[in-house]
Image (cartoon, rainbow, N blue to C red):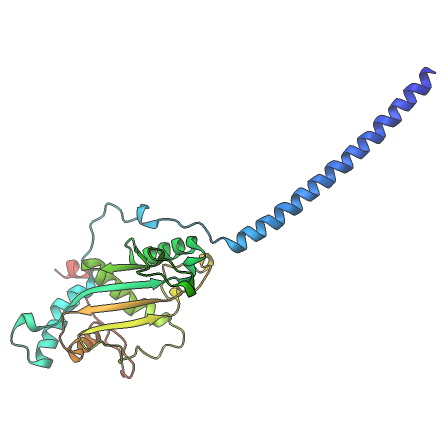
Amino acid sequence: MATKEKAGGKAGAKAGGKGAAKGGAGAKGGGAAAKGKGGKSGKASQPRQAVDFTKRDHAGAGLPVAAPRLQAHYVNVVRAALATQFGFTNGHQIPSLSKIVVNCGVGEAVKQPKLLDVVVEELALITGQKPVRRKAKKSISNFGLREGQEIGASVTLRGAKMWEFLDRFVSVACPRIRDFRGLGTKSFDGRGNYTIGIKEQMIFPEINYDMVEQIHGMDITFVTTAEKDAHAMALLHQLGMPFRGDDKPVIPKVAQPAAAAAAA
């Protein structure tokens, strides 16, 4: 009797162990399947987490900031060329660049508010300045838009950052535009301001191609002190803006600080 009970206990424990193992494997597989489905759906619907790059330290932190080379080119070369071309007798008549405004509208931010965080992050990378979030001025029921809802971002550049951005845009970003044949000359507003539209943010080298989730464009406005479009166009042309129809774009030749110090 003892041997029968012992054998029966071993067989029952063995069978129960197999059943528990099978049940555990099934539960594990179901959990993995649920995890895979949930992970895919979450990744497809939610944009990546945005990072504020303006608060990060960089390799040049603590070093003296070099003067913008395009600003030196304007002071040494462009002003004299514009005075000779238009016959300006007063130095205050010579047009100058006042500010650059980069504006980006995100219509899909109405349904996905986190998408605006990624756009703000990319604008901060491109311009080197933290953007300002823009809100809707009025409600539009057809678009599901409410007054005060954030639907865009903009950056206003002045001073050294303005000259650095223009230098990078002319020398690096414009040649990276797909099928580039020059910038249009009909985008002046009649008061010396020039606005162009960019279809892709990937023309800027600061944007990492692998981190881009959605392609979006932006509007860039160059505000000058010129009173006429001809004066503003001549100013931007002298600063290296590659307009359509030019035989050869004007390339600013500015001596580097190291080369100037060695020559002195």
